[in-house]
Image 1 (cartoon, one colour):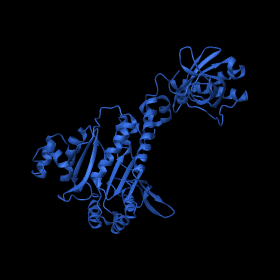
Image 2: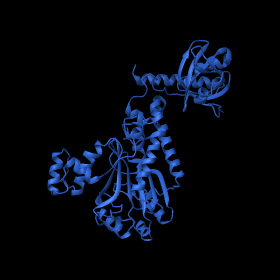
Image 3: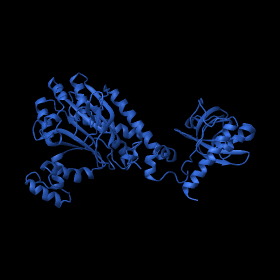
Image 4: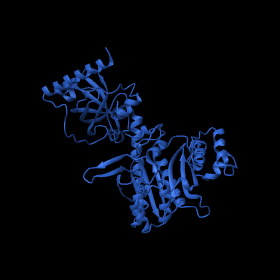
Length: 472
């Protein structure tokens, strides 16, 4: 018999049990069940003889005739239940024949300790709250097929406790970020996800159309230009945690839909924002109980972009010709595709020989102006901008800028970035900037990559509940 036939046979058996429950007058899909405890409180607040009402999914079972032992699992853990014919009554105990692994049960009873020393619930009454028609993955093997795990995340969460723990930590991380920023006087805001001009970053957007207004719209690639409008309007410390969308490739570090935190503070600069981010992430390292090999010792180093390029590509890198730079990059094992501009060649050196090899947190500062069109130029060297890139474990976790607030220079840079195509400019943003935006510092933090770093996840798909997958 094939696995498919075995599964179909089990489904038929469970449908028969469902029908028998209905025939007996019991419901296989109960309604409200008021609980007094979770698995965690049953164990942490254990008191012999204490009355409890508890609900969860049955994940283990041992049938010993007149007695049965099982474990019910909820979001806080699992607790053992003890089922005895004399405690429950014959009719209720008989109903257990129609109960399967994976069913949701509600139980009432008293806490006690078994002969083996396990804190358990001695059940006096039981309700079937949801009959599971399809069997769960085998509890010993778990759910191992990666594709199935991503497509059926609900089974992944039930079968693999370590996966559930990752997403609990993600929830905790976002909660702590909000708490820390709120405590520092920042206001959480929401800005449009559908925008008439996709701006704030250089990326390929998703395009849609609004029928009633007969207008083209884009799913946002970044919230930056709208958050800066709020600085113009007088909101001096703002942040947003929300989705961005980029119609680009999928990889271990990229998903077309991802979560971003952006923070802006009036009268600050990139140095102040680096301090803010260092403190924020250090707090998250502590509260999540990070167990990996990254050294988070503070203060985190701050290294200038050009200095580290010279270290890996030669002290004379910026003195030789552009053609010589291409030749040297190739000799260093960095692939240079045709058509790259000179500053892009240098940035390939940075990404492959510096960023990819950076494990412990480092702020790389003062990047070339061509790379960051929304940042303020350095006062001493106008070919550079006052920015940082925070690199941890080979990935960019956070860029931070001293924000450009000169509307004339900003228009020139955006026009250059758009290849001279005036219609691609966000004129409403530029108009706002012309009304005056205070000097400010701004940062972005990729939440998904941050969660990967703090949990040791290997792929961005492991920290997104429902990653985008090709249709099967």
